[in-house]
Image (cartoon, rainbow, N blue to C red; front, top):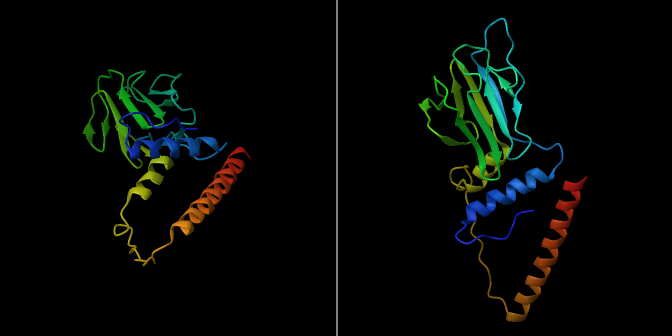
Length: 188
């Protein structure tokens, strides 16, 4: 599970770590994938999506046969780029290739954070990142108005001090039950 909050760590960072832990706790659950979407020769079917199942593992992309995702073209370096899924998101880095790589049509230098739906171009090949963790966080961050929902205002009557303590105890018990249920589901 996630560590305690580190000094200077934002709420968004804590949320990302928790979501990463939750998605990682489910065996066989959804993980980020790099999906081939274009550029393959007509005589060759595109490969299966590259599942970024192991956190912090460097997945190699290039034309070399030992790469995790092989792009069959002389315009692609043997070891062209590396992609890594970390708790803070998916990162891609060019490995000094002669033709570079682009994200959303823009050339990138060094390491670049990818977001769900980003399109990566390597030579004539196009790949799309499908990242359920990032997508889930975007949905949480989206304001209700953007999602087409309206917040409903609820008037709350003043509560006596003793009632507040009871409510806190009840809420704590409910939270423990939910946490235990999530843990049991994750372990099954």
